[in-house]
Picture 1 (cartoon, helix red, strand yellow):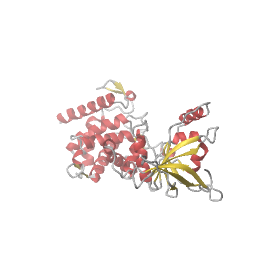
Picture 2 (cartoon, helix red, strand yellow; picture 1 turned 180 degrees about the vertical axis):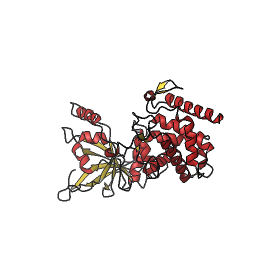
Picture 3 (cartoon, helix red, strand yellow; picture 1 turned 180 degrees about the horizontal axis):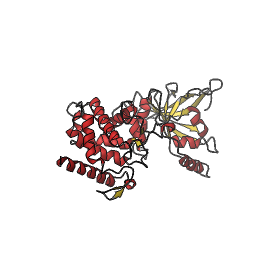
Picture 4 (tube, helix red, strand yellow; picture 1 turned 60 degrees about the vertical axis):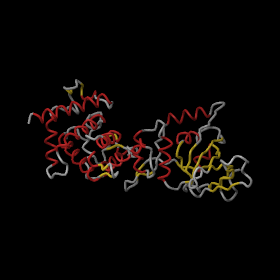
Length: 380
C-alpha cells in the first residue's frame, strides 16, 4: 500500500474496532517519515479573543533526543503507538469476508488518508505521542514502521477530552491539564471534575480586565512575550479557589447550591476580585513581582492569603458597598508583620525567600497569618 498516483492518497491495511458506533477506532501502521506529513501537533495557545486552542505541551528537546538515539541504535523495539484524531476526510473500507468465525471484535479493511497539499491543512492531529512523533521525524531510518491508533474527530473538544483522559495517569504538567479542563464538555472522572470550576474561575481572573490578577497568571498557553507580567502560576490560584469552594468553612462554599448542583459564579468572581484588589492595595511593593522577588506572588503566598480570605470574607460580605475599604482595614491588621520581599517572618523563624511551595511551609505561613489576624481582631 502507498500513495495513490495522481490522487495523492495514503492507503494502509487497518483494523477497525467498533467500541462505539459514533467513534470507531482504527489500528494501522505508518512509516516514521509519514507521521508528521499527515498529522499536526496542536500546542496550547489562545486566539485573539482569548479562546483556548490546541492541547499539546511544548516540545521537550532532551526527551526527543533520547528517543532518537534509541531508534537509531542497532535493534530498537518501539511498541508504543501514536494516538491520532482523524478528520472526516479519512475513509475506511472493509474487506469482504474479513470476519473470522468466532472473532467478532474487529473488521479488517483499508484506511485511506488524503495527503495535504504543500502548506495545506493536515487530515490528522496527534492526541498522544507528540515527543515520539517529533523523534520519529528525525531518525535515520525513514521507513521505520510505527503503530498508530486513531479515531475520527473533527471536534477539538473531543480531541482535548481524549488527550486529558489518555494523559491523566502519566506525568503530564499539572498546569496543562488544569487549563484544559474547562474546555472539556463531556463528563469527567470525579478527581478531574472537582478541578474544572476552579480552573474556569482562574481563567476569568486572568482574562477579565477588571480583575486585579488580569494577565498575571501564567498558564500553559501564555505566550513567551507575556511571561514577564504572568508572575503567578495557575496551579496555586486553582488550589486556592478549590480549597475555599470545597471546604464548608471556606468563604466561597456558600456560593454553591449542592442540592441543585448549581454555583453562583458571578458571586464568586466578585468576591475574589474584591478581596485580591484589597491585597494588591495593601501590599503594593510586593504586587506584580516574580515569585523569586516576592513571596506574595508565590504559590505559598497565594495559598496562605487564600486561607486568610476565608476568615476575612466570613466577616465582610463582598457585596457591601464599602467592602473594599473594610477588607483593606482587616488586611492592615497583619500588614506590618508580613515580609513578602525582605526580612524574616518572626512567627515562623524563616527568611522571606526560604518559604517554598510545599505543604509544611504553606501550613505554617497560613497558620501564622490567621493567628495574627484573629489576635488583632480580638484586641479591637
